[in-house]
Amino acid sequence: MRRFILRVLPALQLARVTTAFAAIANVWFVIFWTHGFAPEPGTESFRTLPLGLLLAGGCLNAFGLFAFATTLNDVLDWRRDQALHPDRPLPSGRLSHDRAITVVVASFGLAVLGATPLGITAVLLTLLVAGAILFFNAAGKYVPGVGLIVLGLIYAGQMVVPNLHLRFVIPVWLVMTHALLVAACVHVLGRKAPGISARATFFALGGWIFWTAVMFTVGWWRGRSEGGLWPDWVSWYAGIVPLGLGISFAVLVWRRVHLLGRGPRVAEKIARYGALWLSLYGAAWLFAVGLTTGGWALTALAAVGLLGMTLLREVVALIEQPLGYRR
Image (cartoon, rainbow, N blue to C red):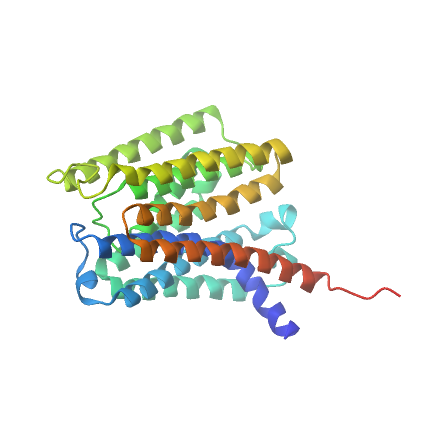
């Protein structure tokens, strides 16, 4: 059993499986939302396929894209990780390059397979998001002013794979903004190179304003006959809890930085909490509009992800430093 875990564990660490739940939660939110509101223009798949199959396809697609992104990042950065993160699966030698590339190809295939029941638009959008992931890992992350915007758009694009024609775009905008801010905090607090200069900050802020305007314009145009950007069939009260969650996350970041200071340790914690918050945002929206089944599903997903983070850390510690007996 220990030998099997030693063979599988590096691939699981490479794919960051314990934070993939956030990507799944984003996709499931769109599926539950579209399925629960008749005014949302769902694709033909939403009219002909059972909800369970839609959720299964969305899960495979989201997990595949997330694993593709994280594994590709480590494959391209293995030389850099030898100096900065020698404990990771590739630089430590616990996983070969051939197996890592196999994970990249398999995860991409899984993403396309998951998008297939969602329709041709979902497949094409999956290919577009995968291309954006490739650009980010190959070049974008080395230019923070560009990389932060691309990363936010990747999260938004991956989220709407099941339904690109979503009318209520505020939750998608919130995920894009949250992902961008978390990435900026992790970059600055983790002292990653290159640093975020004033020019990069200005460029990232300008890009965020531009894409915010694009999203809001599209959302207003699609719902112009039903209340505009915030449709009549969505209560204004629905935004209170997500807003509160955003404020609570800012307070959490401030407290962690105050207690731990800057460095890779606090940056890693913020990245993990940031992933957890994405699931909480989706659950909050669904509970607020009465879609309790979806709300509980996303809550359970967040709980499973949090439990997985804890268990994986414990398993890694026990495997690498097994308990012994004192004499």
